[in-house]
Length: 253
Image (cartoon, rainbow, N blue to C red; front, side):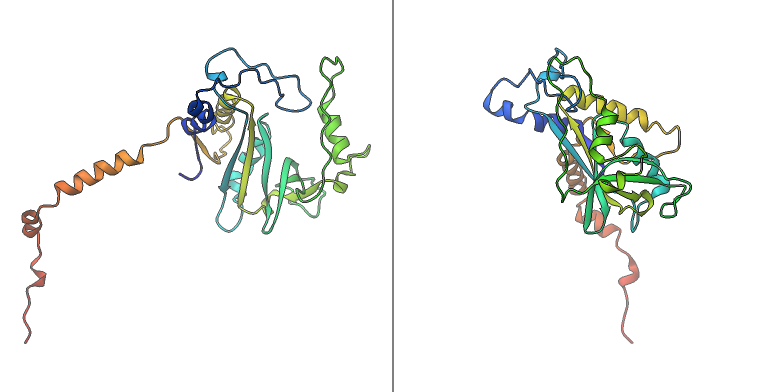
């Protein structure tokens, strides 16, 4: 079903390898969610130790017919960047996709962007980008994420040099077809993502959810059997003949 993520299907895929060969799933996953964060310490429970590996969840969507429905999904798309599991989204214009990593309100003095819209900041995946340097293990010096991002994308002291590195696009001009990306290191992070999606899309500000997260995938095969049984019960020639119309009784003159 379009626009739906089934949790049981995700868990099934992420545990398929260990289920087939009977191996013990990986438990000691220490790769941080972000390269600048502390090492990940998974919780000691069974549900958290069943995944074979980390997951990148891609959710393809179409948020509008011919153009992006900003009135319905503008606020929703902006909220996605608040989630720590969010790694941005693929989108942009036709035949020129970019990887958008953040957004900000449009400047009121901007002539290019609508003052009621948001500016999307993205990186061109067709060009080489600077990779983040992971913090040394055991180091007491914490790297400021904001300062690091500014150095990567080239924001200078005046704050106007970002155009040298980043692509900027008005959200209202976004093509309706896009793909959201999320990184979950284990099942615990995935459950946290699902819970936070419910929180940011509580409907308090009138924003619409871009997709749903459902616990169980419906059994469509079971439903087909019920329909077939009903059709067989109604396939009685005598009953059908009783409801024939008299409109077919006619003569040629």
